[in-house]
Length: 369
Image (spheres, rainbow, N blue to C red):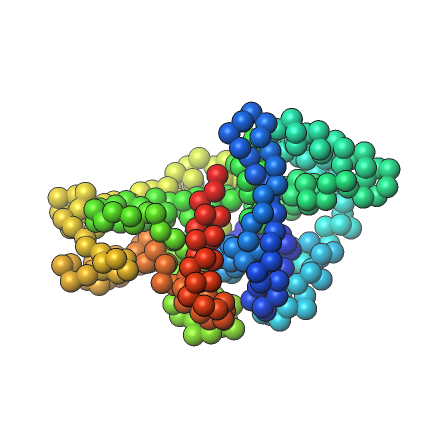
């Protein structure tokens, strides 16, 4: 099943509702961990920022994965949202009846849930109480924890059963990363995203411009989709169209994931060599190689200025062939502050003050640990 990813219906629902102007301005909750040994509580977060994170995740999957696999039993949460439902009509969403095969993965779900709860004595205690409550009444006493922990364990168990990587929704990420199962999600695509982020940090750090990294940034694929869309209704169609430009990269990621799943060290190293080659090219652009560029200047809007012909530099990178060119193009995409502002305008979010507030909340949400 190379090229597929198991996506949570929760992600599709949150993204679709926001795109269709539903639940905007609402307050959501997520599990928060403090510095104390067992500091666990729920904290309020903006539903807008959660939904925007889901939109970013969805756009990346549309472009970089062949098919998004979901649990068929829960697809009704987004099936009445036209902008999401179109993905199913185009064959990009595959609804699988995992619940009808529960005997093959439910036991694993319980083991994973116990592993996730081990990240904190408080979480463990609440999870055990949830199990007792559910056995007695069919309802959990702590429904938020149940949705995050039990629901997350269920998706990981389904992913193991289907042998595909899983992309958790934003409000499950912190618990997964806090546990020993954090490495079980992401796979090849997550490795690529981390690589691109590292290369962009290196590239923009070479400018010497203070404050570059204290600003909001978006994934490169998301920036490109926003730049090519004129209205919110075009976001999903543009993402679908962008698949044609990244077909080689999508195939490369599928091969990378297959190598990771098979623990094929030789093939994994072969994919790493591609990334090393791209990294060397970025080093030259950043002036870290003598045969490369000595400086890059950016203005306060993070756009290249006249001291360097950045277009010529980009052309020298993207005129390569295949995967190298496509990864270079992603690294050289602008950080995304302007794209984020354009996205909010297209969504009709409102005043400049509200836009600034959402941008602040989104940055804090993305930067949380």
